[in-house]
Length: 154
Image (cartoon, rainbow, N blue to C red; front, side, top):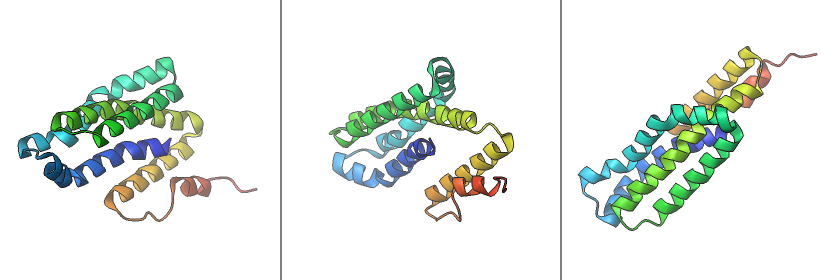
C-alpha cells in the first residue's frame, strides 16, 4: 500500500524532472509545458475525496487496484505520446489513477493496524520516508522498523 502512495508522488517528481526533455522532444511552448505536471495534480486534487468514498462503497482494495491499472495506462500513454496534447491527456488519466490510489491505500493502512498509537506512528514514519525519498535523502529507518519499535516484548 505504501508503494502505491510513493508511486503517486513519484509521478509528479519524474514528470517535473523530465520537462526539459519533453520540451525538446515535442517542441512544447512554455505556456503549454506547465500543463503537463499540473494536469495530474489538478485531477488528483479534484477527485481524491470522491475516490475515498468509492473505496468505502466498492471496496478499498478493489479501488486501489483499479487505480494502479489506470495509473499504469496513463504512464504507457505518456511514454508513447507524440504530441503535447497526448502527454497532457495521459497525465489526466494517470491523475484519475492517483486519486484512486491515495485515499484507498491510506484507508487500508488504517484498517490493517487497529491500535491507534501504532497506526499513528506508522503513518508518521511512512510520511517521513516519502518526504526524504522526494528530497533524495536516505531516511534513518523505515516505517516498518518504527512500528516494530513499539511492539511489546515478552
